[in-house]
Amino acid sequence: MKDIQIRPATSADFEAMWTIFSAHLATGETYPFECDATREAAQGYWFGPGVTCRVAVLGERVLGMYRVVPNQIGRGRHVANASFMVSPAAQGVGVGRLLGEHGIAEARRQGYLAMQFNYVVSTNTAAVMLWKKLGFSIVGTLPKAFRHKRLGYVDAYVMYQLLQDPDHWPTTDE
Amino acid sequence: MKDIQIRPATSADFEAMWTIFSAHLATGETYPFECDATREAAQGYWFGPGVTCRVAVLGERVLGMYRVVPNQIGRGRHVANASFMVSPAAQGVGVGRLLGEHGIAEARRQGYLAMQFNYVVSTNTAAVMLWKKLGFSIVGTLPKAFRHKRLGYVDAYVMYQLLQDPDHWPTTDE
Image 1 (cartoon, each protein chain N blue to C red):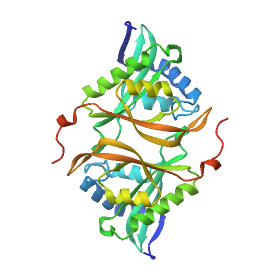
Image 2 (image 1 turned 60 degrees about the vertical axis):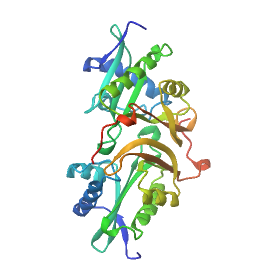
Image 3 (image 1 turned 135 degrees about the vertical axis):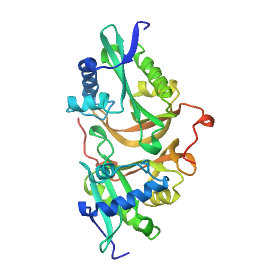
Image 4 (image 1 turned 120 degrees about the vertical axis):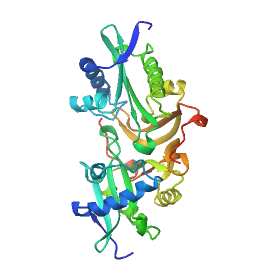
């Protein structure tokens, strides 16, 4: 694990990221994108305006990636949203956790006051457990909101955590 | 009330809609957009690709509007999202309720299986009460997720309702 580095993603990483992205979509178990998602959609998702994107690499090999974006504009932009994907070939060895910790720290560094996941598939127990370990709580349950490829309609969770002590949040408009 | 009609919005309605939109943004109490939101942003919000937009009119006068869009792509597109705005000059006479009922019926007609509001400001009690009356439940609470212009950071609610009996939802992938 100590040789894994996390660094800004570049366009040279895109092919490897597209492979990971496509593998996730093919399962139909974790993300809303379907198999027919285009390379352009993936490009926009990981490299669009306002997206902070980082990759975990072991030497030349991309093991996974995350993105951080504002979850809302304007009066909701103090809350970050983030997405994480790990290569199927690198699962179960802690890459998700490394990326998660890094993404949370990055959002905090950028001044976000909280982080929200809008759509964690309830049957993705590895993800739910990881996010709980990293400080998130389930703050909402969306009944049958995800059409799981194998299981049919399943619940999705909204998960959330404050990133800064609210007593020290910046003052607002007035 | 019986003379109020709800019909598809056209580009000729945009000026009136922009006035209503701007009035809501100026309060800073209900929607994340800030006062510096552009006409282009409003245009995209109400008339962008995939947006169903309806206006409530009394003769020539636009009293309010709603939009219905998929809340997620792909594996989440069976859940609708909707937004509603009523002209400050027409508030308190039931236009919101008319629009709400119409929007729910429209989403059902389009085949959506559920409807989700991602971001109902908790202090907007009139809205929260209306949505409860129209069948929504609070399924999540987002701590301090909205930067209210007068009150500072306040909670936002995720609200949700099924639009069709799940026993009769269409079968899925497999």
